[in-house]
Image: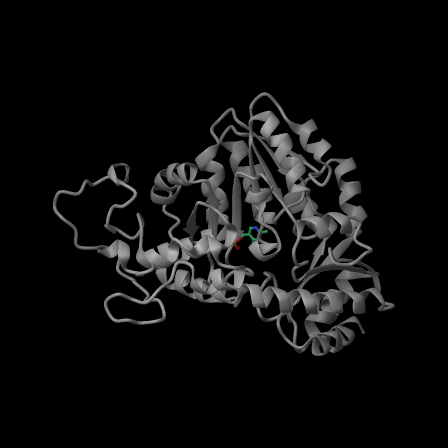
Length: 410
Ligand SMILES: *Cc1c(COP(=O)(O)O)cnc(C)c1O
């Protein structure tokens, strides 16, 4: 039976008793019943031999249906989905070809013309542009609020609000949102709460336990962890995920390649250990930057100087590996970094074993992505000033990273 390909039916029953490191290694996997292989196979097949009696629409498919066509379901992708669901403490998961495909599937799968979305006024730029551009064009109303104060979320609600979308820590300024408090607002409003938890990962924060309805991840970042595969995931309650997978998974067609699913599954197995190393190094480097004369301000949730450090301690089990910092002349420093850095790559993205750094100017990102009100902009500048370097601390020796930053800062 294809459904038993991973051979882990018996192990799966125990998944929820495992501690995080065991879950990350074993959930969704098991000895291959045909060969005894210990490592998962990659099943690249797009189609599967089936009984002639099976239907031709995804709507006819039962939960325990055999594999038919890879856009509807694939053994390798399913293994990844089971591992991620176990790590996040979710009933179910759908993997997608990228984080943006996951976000789009959730927004377009759950919202219709006339519905209203409240979204964090800062977020991953692609998410901001999708909400303000595409959703608005399709007749979905969008209100952006500074979600770091739950009263702003409450103030943004309307009769038609169906979804609240937050990201914590938020890209690129590492401002936090109190998930439990916003979940209470969402519940009262009868709206669903979505948390983009890419920066936190399930090792730091499990939003579903705090009352969120959905979690979104870009698997391209920490969960894959090696900068070699795009992927995304949506996690939530069983029935809701099933509804979403029929339309947004099967019909939108943003299916992840089984090869990428396999790479990301391999990365996910070491996530708990990697996050500990990312966070330890990030703390060292945040302290180094805070004491460096060329650095004006460091924003890292693990530092006592972070304005929401108390919330970070309540809501995050590790402070993750992302640091934002300000210098006097960002664009000039960016040019120097791109030239001088020998270990850290001057590049976008984050969460990889290689350290990455990138300058994000406030005026630039306002013009392209966020378009904030004056009051919101003032609150954004309270974190970012004229802009921040977004540093993704990798798994290199932190002493080498400090030396490299010293060189880059001049
Ligand atoms: C990168 C990222 C995304 C988009 O993910 P892709 O895999 O690049 O499509 C969404 N949200 C956050 C917070 C991200 O960092």
